Length: 183
Image (cartoon, rainbow, N blue to C red):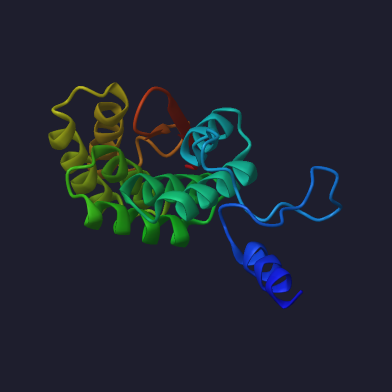
């Protein structure tokens, strides 16, 4: 009898077999099936940004941070969504971390420039846009236009005050986000 009890206890502790809850069990599953595919939080966040769902995009980016860690893409995405939510201080901090982690990532430089423009730091924004433009080799129309607007605003601040200027947020991959600048 003692031997049967010992085998029963060992079977309960065995991960390969042992006692497992049935499919009809009222208890929550104990783990995540790693064999199943999951949707990338960054991809979901990018789509939500395009749809204008910024709070949901923030949640998706935070989930991506939990899955991937705080890499350059995640930092840049979190900075961009905070910018869209009007949290300029948080956006600047995150985007500065993104460019520090990868100094060759042009979208993060561009988005940092947009934050600086929104804060009225035109001179620094122009320098940041120049960096983004150089890293991008002038291929992105959004970065080129942002640099042009920053140069014009720095050289002729009164000229652009009444215009509805738009500065474009840039992300890795396809798509773009537009940020309306306040005069």
